[in-house]
Image (cartoon, rainbow, N blue to C red; front, side, top):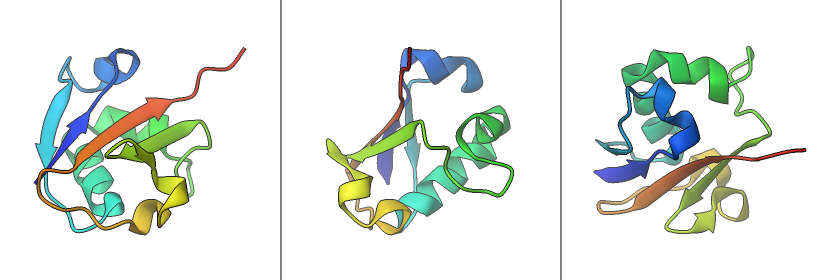
Length: 89
């Protein structure tokens, strides 16, 4: 099971939870489990077509998943996943 860390700006969607332990073989599975648990988060991070919004960044063990296999990146026990919304001017 991986630990998903939620930054302060997104905790209003997770009832204040900041460290959530979730299972999944790939990042997409973990994120799916996350929005299954916190449904309000889904509209914030996904488009109507089900794609990750461009301002949402996901890191696996401090590595941007865009440099890996994106949502298809494999997840292993004790991995750390961080959701980070980009801040724009």
